[in-house]
Image 1: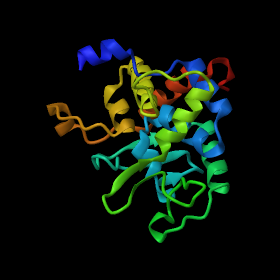
Image 2: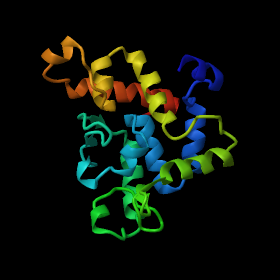
Image 3: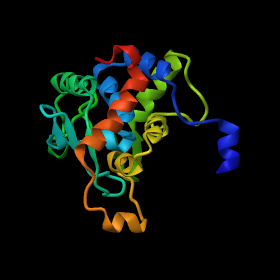
Length: 207
């Protein structure tokens, strides 16, 4: 893993790169990118995010990670909540009832991550659309895709040194003895982490 990382470089984006991606993205992809850098969401996270997990009025997401089932709670930036509203308003009608509550639906009426055909071939439309955006902006690098936004969030958020709060936002399991005794992480700590990353991304534009 160390050799692979040394060969391909770091899997994260700088603030100016994220802002360029946001400026060029479609409404749905813009909301996905913001979830990636605001909450550390990966491909499957945005693809399987149900609207029932969103509290846009208060600005929170409560959504266990589809990959692991680990609980996660994330405070939403105003920019993220606004982008989610716009994405939902423009959302195509889903073709299947199983996808009716999904926040994001492709223009073909499908979930953004699914399987296709008798062999269950995986389809990751999140990665495909994001790669197109990277190429259009000349930001493509080997091994760097949508999941790099999750790396970006973690790298920046770690500067707060509130690692339990960072892990809760990301939905990372903590196997330490501390976690066995920790009963909660207060919301103001989660907001402090999210606000720090927001300041890193938007700088002087943050009100």
